[in-house]
Structure formats: structure tokens, C-alpha cells
Image 1 (cartoon, rainbow, N blue to C red):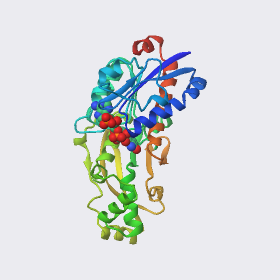
Image 2: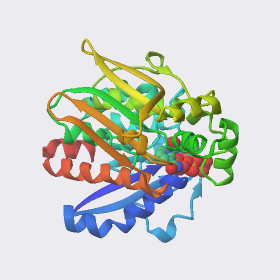
Image 3: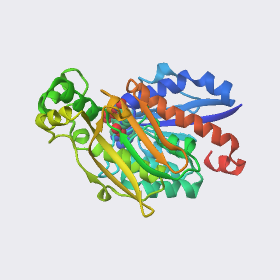
Length: 342
Ligand SMILES: NC(=O)c1ccc[n+]([C@@H]2O[C@H](COP(=O)([O-])OP(=O)(O)OC[C@H]3O[C@@H](n4cnc5c(N)ncnc54)[C@H](OP(=O)(O)O)[C@@H]3O)[C@@H](O)[C@H]2O)c1
């Protein structure tokens, strides 16, 4: 049976959950794909663990100091890297060095953090093309909500005319709380933090940057655009007043923070901002921490998906959905390309 070695860089909530799920699904990988999957290395910022024969669940709390960094991961012999470190779209974050090294060496990569993909997406895409590596990023592009898979698989062959998405759960929750409970933004944020529905620092979400990052990934990796963050107009929800919410409510309108892509004269335009929907529109019903995407195409009309899963399990599962796509692709990839990445 063929062995597939996997490494995980970034070993916090998502990285650990992904490792656990991967090990729990080993029997499935044997039965469905005929491969013996081994987790050969994991690391955080300062410590890690490696075993060429494969790590077991019981070992994952025994990280050793200094075992970290792109060289540590490449020396593990992994054929597939799962990157789950912190996200920083202004610098690319630590993920950038891991991904450059892995893709240059022909290792297939599953990316969960958005930073490197937003900062250097086209360059990473070119590195993958040059080495024949597969680059997958469902975990970074709204995770439990299928987005890139709809564009790549479900609508294959169609021309996408427009995309709009409710791509950030926290802002959707806050707008809903403002609308249904009559709260202003500050009160909704306090309520969400009290209930554990929002982080201590939510500016990345509420100022629209998280939505913008996901939208950029959909444009560049789903529609083949070459946008940078400077090309996006970005508006958040932090300046929405209770009075505006009331006015929309009295008109039967529901506000959502929307990432929009439109094709104008063959060019993709992207923006993030508030849009309002009548109650009859499916987007008006996407409540709480749900996310949604609506894609308009020339031949299949409108396609809508709505999704939400418990985190971090949902994101780990999205990454391992990518892993199964890689297993399928490796099974049909010419032998010389598989050898190149081994
Ligand atoms: N949480 C979610 O539900 C969710 C959903 C979708 C996407 N994401 C994305 O997934 C990523 C991970 O999220 P998380 O919640 O797991 O974050 P987290 O708990 O803060 O974990 C981040 C991990 O990255 C490690 N790290 C930092 N610098 C590193 C370096 N130079 N080399 C290797 N590892 C390094 C940290 O190591 P130390 O422990 O040593 O600091 C930590 O293990 C983030 O980019 C996030 O945006 C998260």
C-alpha cells in the first residue's frame, strides 16, 4: 500500500484538531483511497515533533523545543503540508516561508491561514504550477461554507458573472443582534463577547478585513484574477447605528456585510460593504453565525450555499476535504510528478 506522509505547521486550536481528525480517519483513507496516511511532523512557533513512521494521537502533547520552521518541516519527508499558523495579510505571516519552501519542493499544500495567500497569492500559485504541486485552500476561504469548490467543480465550464457572500460569521451575528434585539454596535459587541461569540479584538472582522481577505482568495484562486488588497473598497459594520438598523427594519430590509465580485468588461471588481435584502431574499434568512454565498453564472443561473459548523472542527474538516481531493488527484497524477514531490 502506498504511504502518504503529512506534516502540519501551526499547532494551535485548528492545527491540533486537524491532526486528530486526520489520525481518526486513517482507516477511511486506507479503505477508500488505498493509502497509508502517516502524520510525520507537527510544529508550533518554537516546538514540534517528528517521526518518519508516523505520530500517534497519544504523542501530540509531547512537543520538543526548537523543532520548528520550514527546514524542520521539509526534513520530515512529508509529501503534503497543512499550514495552520497565524494569519497576517500585511506581511504574509509565518505561513509564507513554509509555503514557499514546500511548493518550491513540489509538496502539495493545504492552507488554512489566509495571510500568505492574500499577501503573495499569485506568486504561490506560480510556484505550485512550476513544481506541479497542488495548492488547496478551502480552510482559508470560508471553511465549512463551500466556496472555491463550487467555482472549481460544481460550476465548471460556466462563466461566473457575479459572486456575493456573507463570509464572516462574527459580523453576521452582530448585525443580527442589532436588528433583532434593538442594540447599538457597542452593546451588540459586549453581548457577543459575553456569550463567547466574538474575540477580544474583533476589528479584523468588524472593519471588513476578514471578508475582504476571503473575497480576494475567491477572486484570485476561484476566478483567476490578480487582485491585491489595494484593489478592494472595504467598508465594515462598526459605524452602523441603531437608527439606521431601525430605518431598514421599518422598510422590511435586512442588512448584511457582503463581499461582492462582479465582472465588468472582462475585469473582476471586488468590494466589501453593507447591502440590504428584502425578507423574501434567501440572504435575509442567513441568521446568526451562518455564512452564505450566491454565485451567478451564464449557464446555471443562481447557485446558493449556506453553511455553518462548530469551530475548530469545521475548519479542520474543510482542510481534510482538500486532503481527499489531493488523494484523488495523486491517484491520477503521472508517476513522474508524484515521484518529484516524494
Ligand atoms: N479558529 C478557527 O475557527 C479558524 C477558522 C478558519 C481559519 N482559521 C485560521 O486558522 C489559523 C489557525 O487558527 P487557530 O485558531 O488554530 O490559531 P492559534 O490557536 O492561535 O494557533 C496558531 C498556531 O500557529 C503557531 N505558530 C505561530 N508562529 C509559527 C511559526 N513561525 N511556525 C510554526 N507555527 C507557528 C502557534 O505556535 P505557538 O503555540 O508556539 O504560539 C500556534 O500553534 C489562523 O490563521 C486562523 O485565521 C481559524
